[in-house]
Image 1 (cartoon, rainbow, N blue to C red):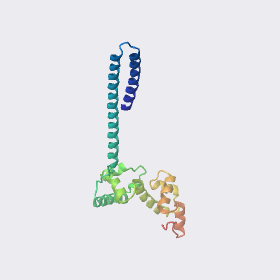
Image 2 (cartoon, rainbow, N blue to C red; image 1 turned 90 degrees about the vertical axis):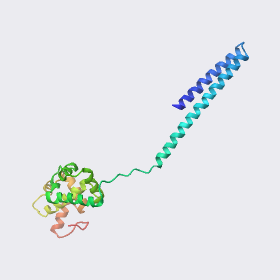
Image 3 (cartoon, helix red, strand yellow; image 1 turned 90 degrees about the horizontal axis):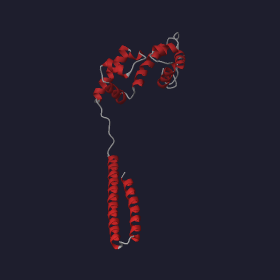
Image 4 (tube, one colour; image 1 turned 135 degrees about the vertical axis):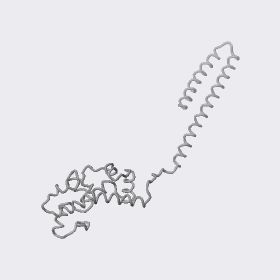
Length: 204
């Protein structure tokens, strides 16, 4: 905005200056008008210099503010719990999974788990991420896969049915989680069990 103002003044001043000079040459008044013209010319030059200074000052302030902002250290996310408290929360979560089998619910969410355990969602997330080094789905799916491994021992039950029983919404999600944790597919795991062998990552 300041730069536009300067350009406007320059253009206007130049135009008026040209007109005044032309009139001064043509006018019979002569010296008196020329003096008025020079006074006008001096006035708008002073105005131009003032606006230029203000523009440069504003730009300098903006650059200084930008530099100061970049110098500020990044904000860190504060934690709610100490390590000891995270350990206690982790135990509560594990008890709910092991004793009440919450992971079998395919609709289980962080909100539902928080309501069931009477813990704040942020406390659960912090404990999972910082203490157990897992996100919510990795935590829940680890219990589902463990349950599925026990059910796979029963050769009469199909893999697809086991996936549903374990709390998975789809066969694809089940296979993906199973291979990530066990290092093989559910079918390969069943075959390995039958032959008393292990999967590629040594698990059985």
